[in-house]
Image (cartoon, rainbow, N blue to C red; front, side, top):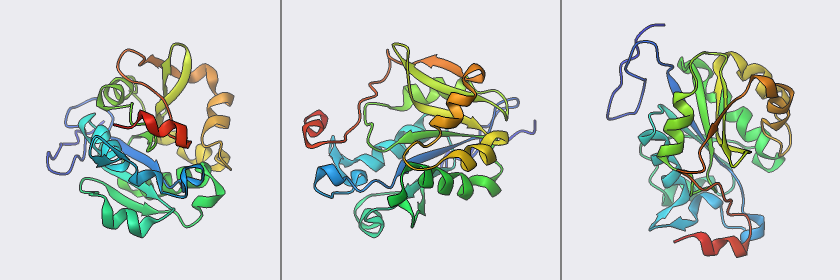
Length: 213
């Protein structure tokens, strides 16, 4: 595998021989219907929008480039959040579910030369760079499948080798994302325990907002 040198200012590449060039993907298109219609990307945690936390986690965890799939309120998100270090990708079909955003994100990365992509969800601020690094380190080939687990329960981040992207995109429908593909290829998934470095809670309802700081 050729060397891909890293550029500290952009987060591109891996920098060392034998490592995958792992891109990052933030799925941030959700409209927050159960949160009063506020785009989840703009919910604030520790003084910053959630989308900024997600981009930072991926970049600090060694991923680059980092693409951010936006949908609901995309113009507002672009205006109110600092997406420096991320490449916005607008998914016009975001209301069709997470699957459409995953397809849009994979499509945006196809021509970029990445060997794999590591995916996080914007509404999981308890998942940071430590979990990203751990999952990223477990993927060593273009056909890699890696999933974080928390006490035996699978969650994000997940890593998909580029050789698998076409089939993942084909099966990503509705709100299932890549779940159908991962279930069909369960024996091939490398599981990485991340419960000691991350908390995989979601911000889905008004009651969940109490988890934000």
